[in-house]
Length: 136
Length: 136
Image 1 (cartoon, helix red, strand yellow):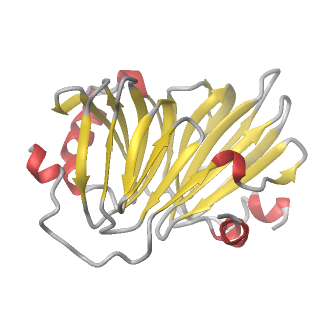
Image 2 (cartoon, chains in turn purple, cyan; image 1 turned 90 degrees about the vertical axis):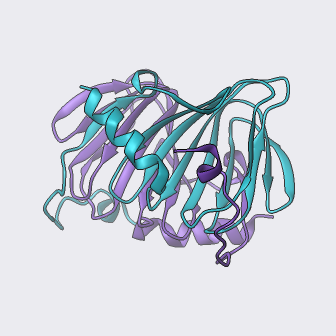
């Protein structure tokens, strides 16, 4: 991989939408479960959902067709990935292919993490669209 | 959106691969430009590239077909998104549709950020595959 390959502007296509900036703190949070706040940012082929867990909050084990990548931003989270339970902290990542069961819970700490879904997770699109329209 | 919709295990498909955990610090870093380190994590439809910028390091403005979401994790970064230059810090996100020109540079601070690409950015796949094979 060369620098010129990576930072090329030679091959050009037509942008499908404008780029945009967002601030996590400006996104309205929806609590699906008490203590569990969702702040989704919608792209075309991805959706990034910033998730805050209060202490002692659980996202039960579940499955879905969308691929998911989890990145812990603050605090710590007890994560379960197809039965493999680990405590995740900033610097830890989980890659969850379609239909792999996973869940998460906090103990005494809070946690901020981001779940990126591709394609965008279907049941978050409406919230993400509403947030984008209420924003700048 | 109900809790039972979001955390369903009823609809079941067949996992296409096992889930896996990764630690950013365990991923070998490749420096494309001095001061600019890439640590990619490959999924199926996404690739998360953890990027470290030393102070006074530039990723020149460029374009590509893959959609990209940028999340700043540490430090600060002067980002340019289709001509709109802003200083991004933790809590800031950029959504970059296909072919939208973008670049970034640090001034006196370092920065750690993550670029998520969908589909996986073609010229990072070989590095990401090699990293995964050298890991656990």
